[in-house]
Length: 244
Image 1: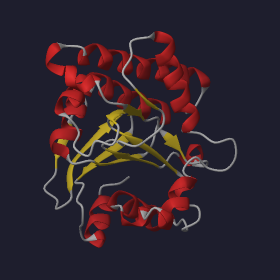
Image 2 (image 1 turned 90 degrees about the horizontal axis):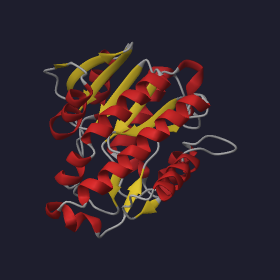
Image 3 (image 1 turned 60 degrees about the vertical axis):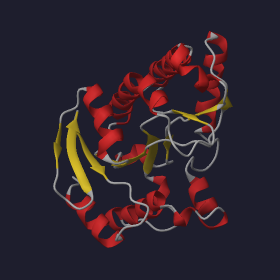
Image 4 (image 1 turned 90 degrees about the vertical axis):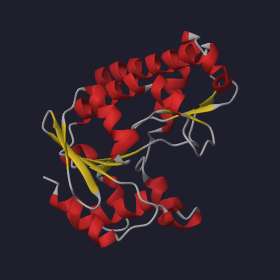
């Protein structure tokens, strides 16, 4: 992710997030969350993202990602986890986001509102094709550490990493410097806590799908709902009206 120095600083932030989560989950009221495994997410860049830095799309979290691990406070183990996460997010050849096209039909990613709407947005907005649309974007999630295979994200786990999630969000925007950021996350319970903790002011919007807009160091931020189904045409038109 960008220059080596930036990667090192970002990795330190991710290591802190892992350590802080492990410490917080040791508290008596959180002990139940120490038993299962977790997955760690690292931002992914399309191979041509750095050329124009057009767009980063954010989800909420992923509960089935690599590496998987059990919570630990061991520094060496944490460093190794972040190293593995970084290595998993890049490839030596091709594009780190080619897996989206690879599994488009095989694992029915086309059924994902998140990926389907992102594909359509990039094709329409930037004139890309079904073969290279994923090359110009970056992909991330607001929360980097998630219980493995957990469909309902525990509030306690979210709160325990909220400060670090907000820090990493700002770091990503500072390092990657995108023109637009689209958070397909919902404002309430997801984007709002992160933005407020990050000290990023936002304006609520009255659109059907776009819930808020903000700006951070020259980056335009759009917060949209994350519906299971929706009118794609209306969603796309509303998001595009708020892009720069």
